[in-house]
Length: 265
Image (cartoon, helix red, strand yellow):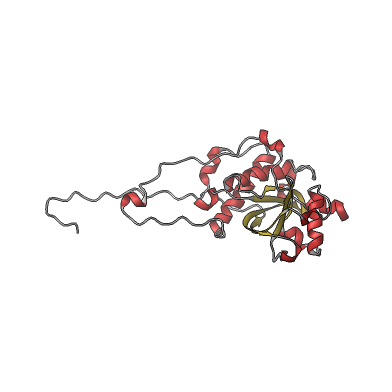
């Protein structure tokens, strides 16, 4: 694959295809009763982590990769992931916040599917389920994967991080980031790994984005929204062993009744 055709195979449209509107929504984890909050218990509440800037920890990354593989295997073997399957995963707060995300499926080092959305349109774990399924069988640029491809497949998940708006080529310093362009309702982007394989000038990068978005060459120079964005990548082959079990909330310990005038020990 070379030239314009090769570029087309690697660019990702930043919006979700309208054809996905009829696709079943990803399952949701079962909800459990929340324990008494810190505020209600009289303790100082712990501030929630800023999941948009904090990289995922090792356990969270393992959870996402296992979730993607369970989704892919189930999708290709006609045993789709269900609500009950999610009970074995430990979804931390940073795995349930809304994030933009792209899923790339590779076989033998060659891309076989790439789908996602730059916008934080769904909880992170749901984005993984949805775009793993779409990348496997609904990317029109590639032949759909089958269960025979599972043994040689690799999953790459790129979670969209900080986005910085720029005005033009003079501000275009990638430093391992991707780039997104939107104008007249048309959108296109290059993920960091795709740009790393090219040796384009800043002007060439913007012109290529315009071409992928079906915009005239050079139209980035007026009223276009151009953003650089960071990603947090999670990737790997099929994990071995069972996933880490979700923690079980500890049962409250009741203090023994105290009589009048008796101080607790």
